[in-house]
Image 1: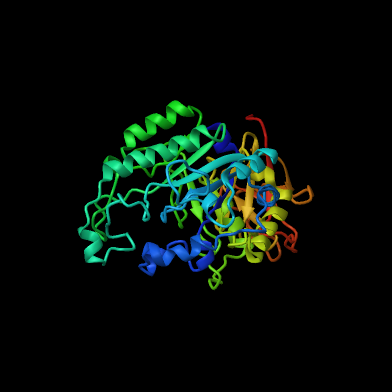
Image 2 (image 1 turned 90 degrees about the vertical axis):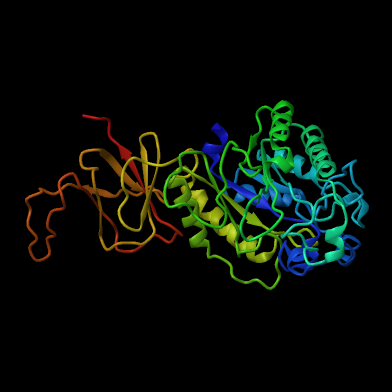
Length: 414
């Protein structure tokens, strides 16, 4: 887990046939498409502008240190030349494997390599129809016999291909189990996937691989999706977040989060000892869309100045003031100010524990003040704070960055 806890920030890439529809990665489910209706995307998939090196460079410039690609999403379409199916990229007009160059591009940029692989498959003829399947309302299709054991063998075979065909892989994100969920029927879980055997195979093939928690059995980390935990969790965790609420390219969805909010989400996660896996959904021509590019570039500008408040950091024992977050790495404590106060910020419990403070953006000194606890307020002189409080004197003008950070050098214990 060392690299995972150190790097803290990764890119998720949702890409596949749904990028042509450009209206959410669950378009086949939402619009109850048949395989025949969905086939028009397979017949026209030709991402002529795709350059995985650009993706990798964009991720690295944003401050990300690992990238996770959807090798197969729920629609069953494979981005590599699988020997187990014809429903793969090499049979589209594009005609070439997409996973191998992705892996090579990430390695060239010094990024860790991750694969997403759906446990669900709406295209496979033996995957039993359930309440999430696009054909859930087709009575004739529901009556046709299907063999989950045959599908399970296929699932395991494809995972074996991915873990033996592309060299060492760092991260594997399975998605997802839904057995017993009250809002659907026919849900599937660990037993359906043969999760125990599947994970044993994964560990045998790539012992150093990190695996998530969505097979229905515990993994190396948990994956809260589209929300931020309210505090540290007892296990390693990673928040999976979108830029605009959609994972796949969604042309008409303009509900993009601001760069400032995205930086706050990253900081918030690290302050709670977690990671952020931030998603992009490339277009059908293989490009990261301009709205996403703009936000990633803005995050990268912030990370260029403030990376050391994220990388290698985690939660702190100290309680941050209102509208602030602490991250900590050894004797460096980082105060992230989500709102900029007027002249002073008061830090409980830090009196006598900080030797020096500076704005991280330009390394300019921030003065430390420890008032006499008995001092009374008088006209322009503020009164004392509770005992043990350290006060920082701030400039009136807020630094022109998404989230200002003050680096506190903790003093050795007296």
